Image (cartoon, rainbow, N blue to C red):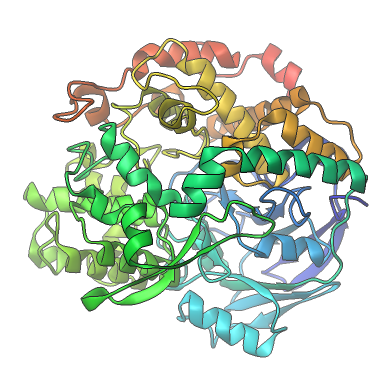
Length: 600
């Protein structure tokens, strides 16, 4: 067996049983792995519409065929389940070293079924797998959980775990591996918590082999040259991390500020990547097999003293400008806390920002929140993060996400979300393509399902006018399809600043021994995206859900380079459906499904 291990580990938490199964290789060829193959298995085994926090909802940890190989940033894995935050199909991506370790132990995927009656963790050492009591770990944060497990399991094990947020079923709870890398979005940590599954510890020594070593290494060398020759992957990201985007987005008038009431912040540079590098950076850090190294190991000082990994751009933004804050120490501390407590920074920060707007509008009071929850209140941010993870006070309401919070208090328009998932750090009024991507994202507000920031802002592979709309439907579709395939292969999205479908196809061919063309790669991605669409339709989503918050469509940007602009989504959406081969209601046609092998 090459690239894939050919083995699935199935764990029934209700019964406490573990068994091995052969991987469906025909499905692997069609869906690759990670997001694609995991979703295929999920759809095959789980009835649409199950309670996301109930025992019928499976939780799948899936790797890709390139995960664990010495390729280009091939350290990825995905967590697939029904998302409690949105009701969509979640596929939350993470890096670090956990995914490769699962492959080295001999498994492509773990499928968790049912619910345990008591806290447990799964311990894997190559062919050995057992459920262990985790009662003594329940209540611990991520860092303490990892330390405790390493003290009793193999000291070189890699661990994915939940913190108190997942245990308390916060709908923005994430799964954290290697202390600070997260399968972050859609609430996958809450699903893990509902199953009383505290952690998965893995140690593997078997390795992964490519089918044709020479062909694979030739493809890797060619891809690495493209990465080294690219200004983003060899310059901006290694030097400043993803937070280099703060000043870039601010300069083009598309940095959402104070819950998207504004689109630039005069002092944003104080929390940007350049300031982090100059003032609070220990060192850069890379995931497995990565030549980019965008991770940051940093610290914070004063009343917000701490240290850890991050922040990423979206984390700096949501606790910074989106909350009306320009304090780097606060931003770093908030990010560290989310890593430790197991919270998705994007939904946590933007939900706090929405609550701040509710507070300033008089919809909630200090008696309810336990603090003066105004924009700019740094201490309130820290309190709200802790209370949300621990299920205390007003934190119990924040734990439901901004959509449910704002609906409850009479202002649904204050939730900057799509399909109940909060939008990230790019104003769709200032950048038209990313708005279309948000609206049509298969998991709700999400930038990494089709990162058109690459052409619209960074000029890769070519520069597009951020306000043009004519070409955006085709570009959004192309980015969504390629990203689906990249995720399924087990490669980091950031490689696509330099790599396209031909480079990915070459690595897959050398790794698997199956001849993949660039066209095959794009077709696989399109198949995955349509499979996700079918799932969403099956649980009640319609074209009416392919929209943006009212503020994006009706309230023009007030100041800055993009002053006067709104999202032109209504003009783009019909042409996006047409480009996808979907009907006017956003439903894939039978002809399209047949062409993708999804009919029947």
